[in-house]
Length: 503
Image (tube, rainbow, N blue to C red; front, side, top):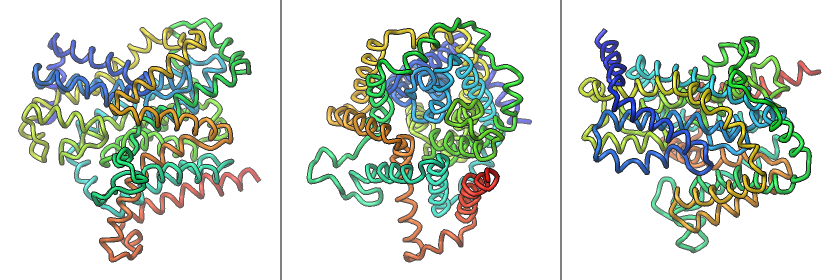
């Protein structure tokens, strides 16, 4: 009862005009930064971090939570309209949303993305408020071998989802893992694979990979297809008259997707979020793969599946709620955005720990309420008000649009890293990804390998060191065994069971 009253007071705190003003401002800023390739919610909160010295703690936390939720949702906007995810977590949305955009159903795709984000974000916030202490205890049960098996599970599932190009998926994933090994060793302060140069000692940042593999390669693809069918498809999309009611998914489509897809995606996203370092990308990957494996229409995936959009978006927004659990309970950020939110807490004298919720619940409750309000109210409201303008992005002349995207993306890669070298790396990876896409190699697998590669290596080496190099530790730990069995189950469901049914 006390917990309920505490969170009720959190919602009442949002009734303060100044607090709600920071909430709306944070959401709009997060939407802009999240939709622009290279300008993520991480960068938005980082740039606004100095403001936390001059404003009260409640508005600072409320604003940070709104930016977080908005940045996670808005990556789907450019992912759908121009096939360039605003954030890595929106890659799966691009796979399904852009084909719908080319068919003249961009408004419908954005509506399903917003609905999935709204449901997932709301459920994630509710689970955060209701089960944070329990979730913290459960996350502690997943030890190092289990974390390795979880990362392996994510990698294997994403590779086998594309059944027609598994070998190329393996190559792309391994290339991503290899790129992630450049720089300082994950366990020892020793540089490796830096080719004797100081520039590569710091390693390769994620932003050049994201911007190169998705933004710049897309610019090159579009330049090559200047007079191809893409132009005709997008011309038809431009000619479609957009009404605000077009953004509202029909009940028949929602029933076809099934409420279980939204709920399952939200639970997967929240559960992934409470694992430190997992992030929205893994949440979207796992939920998308789970939805495809159990779908009644798996053949639609990759060609404009609304179910795929719903699964990915409900998961990555639910992750926002889960990511706060390890950050608040143990001071271990669940993803890069919560790492900066942790800085906001420390600046305001709040030390993460098991007693934080007991002693400072009056300060944390408005932040939790901000997540819920951002998901339930501001996401659909933003789409309703600005949706037609989102879709009209394709009305901008192609030369102006994609040249502007290239400039903004390159500037974004510099702003994110403050490194001219990393900006040039974005160019290099853009050309590499262009040739990969021409040969049907998955850039999603490349990025996933890069993101999860360090964790895979770290947990593998730590696990083996705990057991004197004996790999049986992955079978004797129950949490690791569960994830390995889950991996085998997905391999069976996606590869062998579908193949038998097709025969």
